[in-house]
Length: 319
Ligand SMILES: [Zn+2]
Image (cartoon, rainbow, N blue to C red; front, side, top):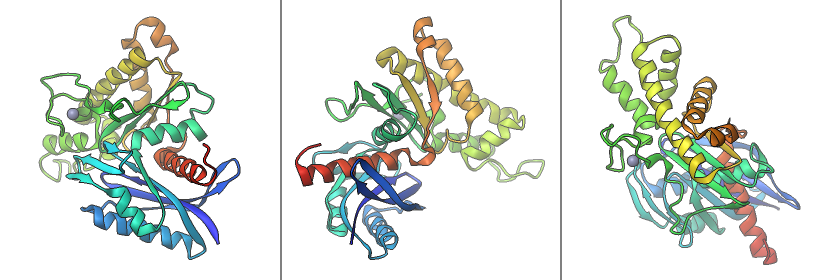
């Protein structure tokens, strides 16, 4: 019987689940990840993660631990999912629910923080002392590694980067404020801007209106002025945010991942150039921005890292 770890990355739209095996120097993936649409309630999500893990294990593995990346604030000590605005979930004891279902201890953490851990441990950020991982997907978050340690903040709330206000007269954000970075550059905001700009499903030339951020970026690249303005505003908001990270934390590296940003390399270069231009000259020169090395698996790798660490701690009493 193999001993396996379950890693899950819950997105507002999609959830990824993968198995990893503990090795003497870390962990290694067992096969490829499963991906499914995130269901509308947490009970179904528990059932779907458990089913995916059991399918992948094919009865040859026993689960010794699990960790789940959550796209919103979590109470890590009590394993509670505090608030998922995009799904309308509040105060869900998700770690206990999943632990009962899997028969193994479960840890929760913020997806951006686990993304930072994943990139720092096994990809773009290896060897860095400090790193910021910005995830641009349906929402926007940031995980920090400071002096070699993940930084959750005094109240577990560090990294609410998407809700930095860049224009207090800007569009309304899901958090209730106006003009947050997320209200310009988050996937939901981009889709909303597209729906407002093209209220009919078909444009005059017969082409479809953009329904996803990726389609919106494609239209902008093809020269559509309205699409170009929307993605340009998103680049500006994100650039202001990255410059703020550099000014406050001066990290070795800022890694950008998340489903909206991945695949938009040219747009990301624009964001990086604009953020450098907004920094003080020395900060701008020192600022390194790069795309996530693990593609869509940054947070999943961070979850595996967390689950492995907890399993080692339970076995040996040391980290
Ligand atoms: Zn906000």
